[in-house]
Length: 431
Image (cartoon, rainbow, N blue to C red; front, side, top):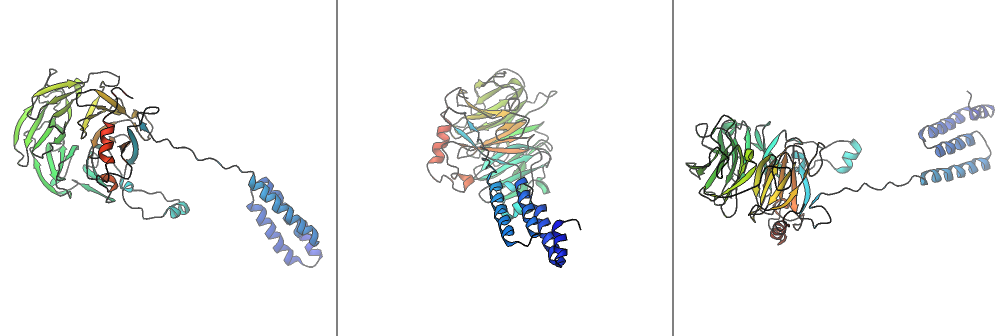
């Protein structure tokens, strides 16, 4: 062979031992990538070709020093700072804080693999994901999301660490689930635009009944149950060729049709492609009047009270209003698909705050095609984006992350009520 160390060993009659030593030196050199490490490896390998103990020891010492020096020059990279979106942004005091995103069952189920196992194997956690979410409702830590592609309702039980689908088969099978709401007993109401009916499930997800049908609806979309659970308000969006643009009111639990609110038009009390409805704590009815770019307010029996909003591209105006939710203080949270955000108005229709922005890149508080929205009893906001297939969760700044229904601590301390109240006190026009 051509290696000097091997030739030296052959002359001494120790060829076998020298070959073993050469293998050790070569293996060491092959493992080392840093230039200073390769120099040290060469020194070690050369020393094996010599039988002088002093030279060998000196080479080993120099190699160790070189290795340590080579390792020491690698700078430690600082961790990249992650910005948590807050609204309004600094320097204004934060009122809402981005908390988490729900996209699949993996976001609520307990992990069956340790962090170390994932690092070693490179495994990525997966789960049953949303395909095209639309509406959302919240009840005691459980988040219900309609999915128009899956033709079912996804249930994220955050405190219970469970996930399920309802309405995917049987007599309650859904075809085009859109608007959704939950009453005080946990019953789930879903507007099915495909079968033109309202489907009701109990707290456990079992089919209970249906309300109305194709004889009463043209295009049911949004719905809401009042606080007493005695009335159901269903938006019948109608269509371009239909005059049935209205809100249909039903008695609960009988399901009997009581009366209608509105007709097609642009005058006060009239609608043009209404999109959604919500009931305030005081019983007033808020209707998103989509193609009239406004929100109309009625009393419990359908008497017109006021209107707010207009078409435009500025805060407080609407470009493509979609769904609405009302918090415990009576503030209205209104989704605008064109803006990629939701705007918060006080009970009189004055702008308080807008949250989120439009983007073609998925990120917290960034949206391309937002649709549904809900506010739970703790003041947490659940905001759906169809394009990014997600539900973003925001909490009031004064509500602790470990407080409230989703944390398994319903009204765990006074912060829950205080957080919602503080969020409602944003100065008009604050961004």
